[in-house]
Length: 255
Image (cartoon, rainbow, N blue to C red; front, side, top):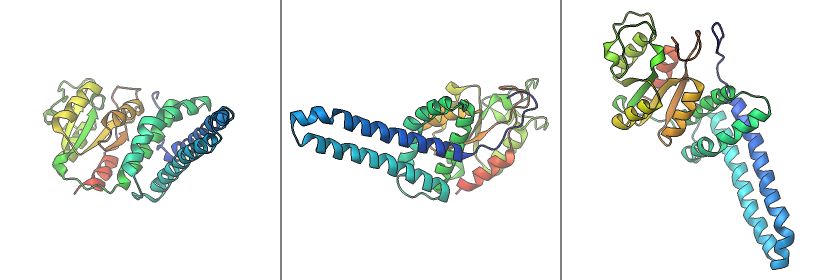
């Protein structure tokens, strides 16, 4: 995002729509996978086409039912059935397919990822998790700190002088208010190291679309609520974040 661009609130309905298209395509492929070999199967045994049809019917039904459950869970904000498992299906299998379908439709990866993060957040929140403050981790990118700041807070946010020139002060105050762990990471490798060391039950992460998406995938089944940063000066440089959004997300899961 270039300087001066405004970042719109990500909409999960785009991801839901693309998920529906993907489901239809998957069911179509399952049908072709059943229909094409049936002629050859009949030559082997007359019952094989029927048995194959039953198998592919079950697979098609599972794909349709899974999509319906995800849509209902997202729309109602309630954990209906198998939400944790279905979130894994979306993260591990559907997201790569949806990104390819979006590309064919002329939709950028970042737009799809924004919608995916919103969808993921909805699924996590629908589980109605209630977690103690000491088992929650707020994970921040280093680019939230002003580039000309002489006090580097990576690994030790307590070093922040609270000058108020960047959002680090508000985030540090937020973590202190709720007694929640907070860490600033310089990249994915350090972020994973922090998560392994602190072993949280939930991560509240701030990052760009790409990093949030990869982080959610890497952390699964650990629940992650993602908040997109704002980039008035371009990527990875003096970025911002709405502290109120983090406060709201944090209060929704605190025990």
